[in-house]
Amino acid sequence: SNFVVGISGGIGSGKTTVTDLFAKYGIDVIDADVIAREVVEPGTPALEAIVAKFGESVLDQAGSLDRAKLRTLVFEDTEVKNWLNQLLHPAIREQMLLQTQQAKSAYCLLSVPLLVENKLYQQVDRVVIVDVDEQTQLQRTLLRDKTNEPQIRAIMSAQATRQQRLAVADDVIDNNGKADDLGKQVAQLHQGYLQLAKQNTI
Ligand code: ATP
Image (tube, rainbow, N blue to C red):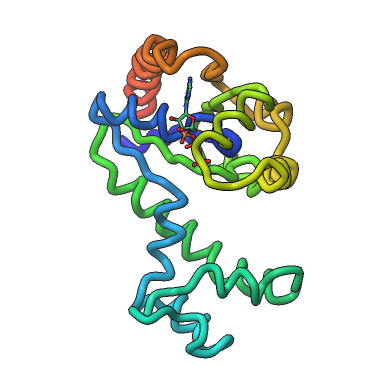
């Protein structure tokens, strides 16, 4: 089946925690973050284009893209940022489509952190949002990442708001409570998605 459930949520909302639970049911999880790294692996046309534009200095010792270096080159340069987006976005979209088509499970999950920001909710059959209040989101991300509070706040304010995400949600997973509370919600959604995927093939 090609039934695609897009899953999103802000930084540290619990997307990975939730998709790991769906994966336990044998559901294929396609991760846009992973794809974003794959499309610039050594040997890809995208990496060749980046080297052609910025020179070999964007590569590390091993010949892989030095993301920190690229970030400094792109930082606050809208023209360069647009060039990079126009290069990478089609490659990422193509891979996402390919991998969802190749999925073997009854339905698949497409995990996209910027689903709302990039309007990708239009491309999926169903949208589930992992929802958490901003305070909890901040605390959990602080606990996990070796960054500081202002940095996380900056990322949060550059992302869609909680309200914007909820506005495009067909389903919401409440992750304000304990991680133990997720299992039941995921089990219920899984059953629903199996039904929807079945209807979709008729
Ligand atoms: P990102 O997009 O930033 O990578 P994410 O949405 O994938 O994040 P996770 O990595 O799943 O989020 O969760 C963020 C952090 O919060 C992790 O350290 C995770 O273990 C923890 N966490 C997730 N859910 C809960 C919960 N209900 N209670 C406590 N901690 C949680």
